[in-house]
Image (cartoon, rainbow over all chains, first blue to last red; front, side, top):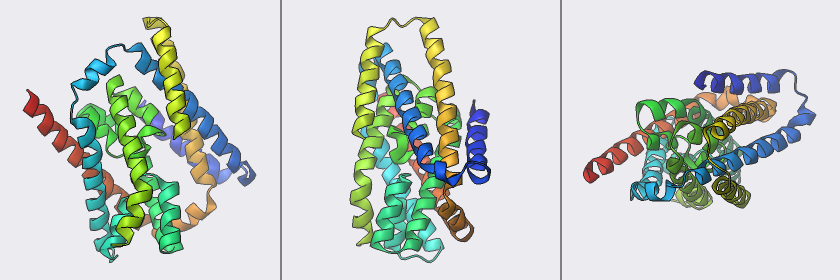
Length: 198
Length: 91
C-alpha cells in the first residue's frame, strides 16, 4: 500500500506535467473534492461501526490537546530554524512554519502580507509538507505510534490526509486527527498574520 | 470545512445503522483503497498542472524543501515524545 501511495502521487504529477491539458485543471479540483468527500463519508462509516470509539477516546485524555500543541511547537521551531538558515528575519520563518501544511491559504496570506516570493516559498513548503505526510504516515504509524502519524499532516489531518490516517491507525485516532486538523486550520489565518507582525 | 463535518456525520450515522460484518468491512476497505488512489492521483495531477508551481520549484524548491523537512521532523519528534511521556504517566 505505501508503495502504491508514492506511485499514485508521482503518476498524477507526471500526468499533470505531460499530457493532461491545462484547461482540465478546474476539473481536477472537482475530482479531488468529490473523491475526498466520498472517502470522508467512508471514514465516518468506519467510526460509526465501532461502537466503543467514544469510550476508547476517553483513554486518550489530554493527548487530544497535546497533539496540536506539539505540532504547533514543532512547526514554529522548524520554520524559525529553516528561516535563519536562509537568512530570513525570524518573523518570516515563523510565519512560513505556521502554514501547518495548508498551502493554498498560507501562500495567499503571505503573498498579500509580504511578497509574491515569500508567498511562493510558503506555498511550496506546505505542498512539500503535505507530500511528506502522505508518504510518511504508514511508516510513522508502524514504527513510532499512531499520534506521530498525525504530526506531519498538520492542518490537513482533517481533510486530505484523513483517509490515510484512517487506514493506518485506529478509529479513535481518526477523531483525534480530525480535532487536531480543525484546531490547526482555525489557527492558520490567525497565527500567520500574527507571527508576521512580530 | 463544514461540508467535511456534515459528510463525516452522515457517514457515522450510516455506520451506526448498518451491521458491522467482516464482509462489509472488507468491501469498505477495498473501496477506500481505490478512493485514496484516485485522490492522490488527482492531487498529484493538480500539482503537475500548476505551471507557476513548477516555475517556482526551480528557484525556491530547495528552501521550501528544507522548511518542509524541518517543520515535519520537529512536529513528529515533539508529538512522539509528548505522547510517550503522557502514556507512561498513565501506566
